[in-house]
Image (cartoon, rainbow, N blue to C red):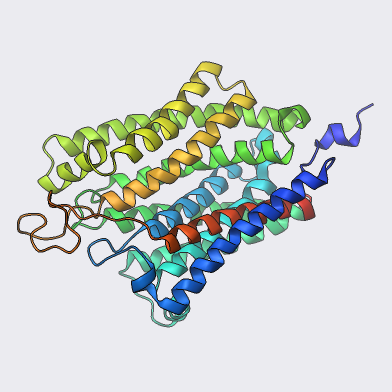
Amino acid sequence: MTTRTEAIGTNIFEGNKGISNIWLGLFLVLSALGIYGVGNIIINGHASTLGVTRTVPWGILISTYVFFVVSSTGLCLISSMGHVFGIEKYEVIGKRAIILAIFTLLCGFGVIGMELGHPFRMLIYNVISPNFHSTIWWMGTLYGVYLVFIGIEFFFLMKHNHKGAFYAGLGGFLAGISAHSNLGAVFGLLEARPFWHGPYLPIYFILSALISGCALIIIILNVAHKGPANMPVKEQQALLGISKIFGLLIGILIFFDIWKLISSIYGAPPEKYETVMQLLTGQLSTNFWLFETVFGLLIPFGIILFTKGNNIKASLVAALSAVIGIFFMRYDLVIAGQLYPMRAATPGAGVQGATASGFVTYTPSFTEIAIVIGAISFCCFLYLAAEKFLNLNE
């Protein structure tokens, strides 16, 4: 006879609750670093607390915002395979994927709010004085609509209202695709930044969002059930399918990245070529080769290829490695595009913060790092709290 535990699996808070509560407390304590960073900005102002300058106005807070919203969109898109597109074996991931999508989006909003000088003023004027020609205005608006849809979707999932979840999920899917491709356009339409400019980034953002979504779903299902041994058969089957999709998408991303580099080296304008060389041999080379390439692409792809996606524990290692690499991908993308000074004359002449090679530099301040650690920790805390207090099993 099948027991209830065998039917729905073992939740992380069943059994040894003490260890789970320790993790909750640890993430809550680390979240206090974010509070310190926020307080430091409020008291001392942006100029003296952030590492950004006039030549590098977008720093790690922007890249972390991109990391969060990419993760949120990816979770929504992957979960839509179940209750939106009707692939039955993926329905079991719905609640967990959507609640984490909500948390990552909210944390992303919080991080970018600390980058802005007047976040509350932005909310007011976004409504009463819209600029329809601004991609950043569309980004904020579309992500706001997306948040509403996934919030409603999660409500219907908790109520087991599948028809309502379908329509809200479809709205969230369309809004997420629109918002995320628009986020790519925020960078891609900047003609003054040749490294970003072009139609590549909106497509790249959607592809990398799907990879982030697969990786995070693999992680949270393993966390929720304390490994595959306690995982229900349906969730194991879903994870095996997602692992294969995960490997396929990484392979496609590797192909994209190779041609992106080739097109940026051969026949590209000097600004684009020199920026790519900063990734390959310059100040961002460690990030690019070790974290972005090895952790983000080669290790996950190699693991999935070797196991054919049939080993959940191995897929978990691949997913953890990919999430680390994806964080650095976002950082490298945002920072690299600003290293070549925006000027017509010889690079570096009279440019604030320029090195002898003519490129500017950027180093995150302790306040920025504290906010990033705090935001990631708070997101983890929120998810573990949701596992404890909400029924996220199908």
